[in-house]
Image 1 (cartoon, one colour):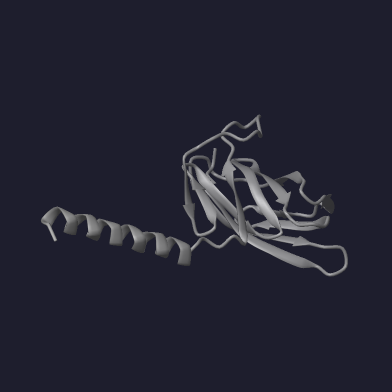
Image 2 (cartoon, rainbow, N blue to C red):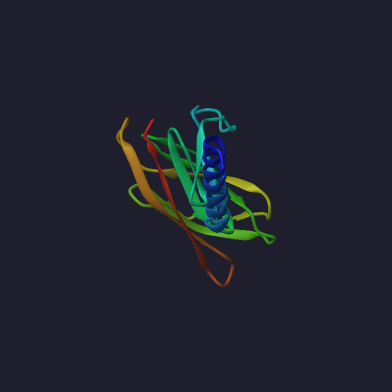
Length: 158
């Protein structure tokens, strides 16, 4: 074997090993995540640089991730509270009984999210600007048999 062929074989083995690792340790799809919304008055999606990370996405300005059946599509963290858009990714409708974000507050919207649809929720609280806000999310949902979806939200307070 020539010297150049040995290098090529080593590179191919490393590449094949990397592909096998990615297949075996594929990110868990039980979390649906969202992105930070940069404009206070516009809750439309805005692109940012993202990096896949353990079934969630981390944007430059923050992250939001909740367990199924919900997904955190977008969120804004302001000094007056947090606005979050939740998507129902399931095949049935769910009534949201409460949303609790640690270090911010709890609301009781008693609102339905239709399967495949999204809803905007505002959780009022007082946060200090230009600081990192990191809090666990707990969503209590269901009509008779209450269930819980959990997650995390973190980002810089605008």
